[in-house]
Image (cartoon, rainbow, N blue to C red; front, side, top):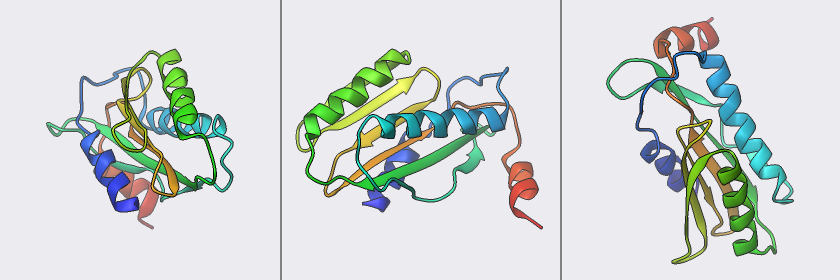
Length: 149
């Protein structure tokens, strides 16, 4: 499950135009806030980070973006009802939303305050993952500043 969601984050990680007036820290905070606020709508207990937000260079080598995944056991829930809650919330943020109901519902969104998000409903786990907007910055410098002693 985590590998599938991580692959989705990578798929969503293409980079559009940079948000020149947003710092890397603000982009990371926006991404994690939208994901956490989405999780609060669902009432599923046990949400946890699948890891820290990851920083990388935007496609084309200019600027940075963040990826992040949040997950929880889904329990006995209304999958379609939860997918609709997520879709409605993301639309309220100005995102373009698509719901795939071919199997268990999956919600995809792009635009708005982030580059892209995905809400998956199975199997057995809920997952919300996505990619921030591409912003000016240097991924290697951020990694050095935050992770290297």
